[in-house]
Image (cartoon, rainbow, N blue to C red; front, top):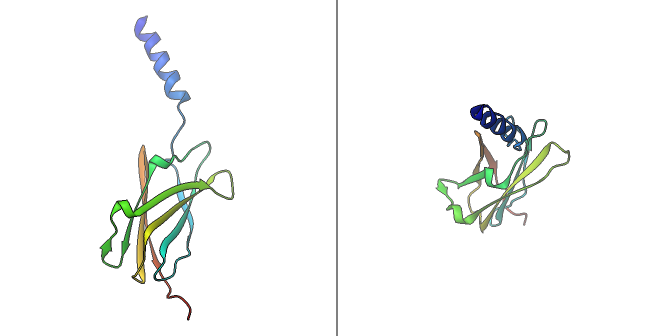
Length: 127
């Protein structure tokens, strides 16, 4: 009888837990960076049903040319998207980008891990 009560309590607890993003997909991306400016990159994440996307579940790596930026120079935030089931993952750097090719790898890792690598071509500033 005691094991049945424990099983019911455990099942109830797991059933009430907020699901984390695991059936997600990526939508459009946006980069509004010019050479010599810090990176400003965004990727739209599409959630299903009642999924959530917590900040602690998101990480990013930034490669400027052949050089990986140290994680301390890369910031990641999660913002509301245009629809209820969409979130913007924003990746910024605290240092200017001096290479015309930047690769940003975004990883969503709560439960099942989903990772995508995006390559952006950074335009020079207009003269």
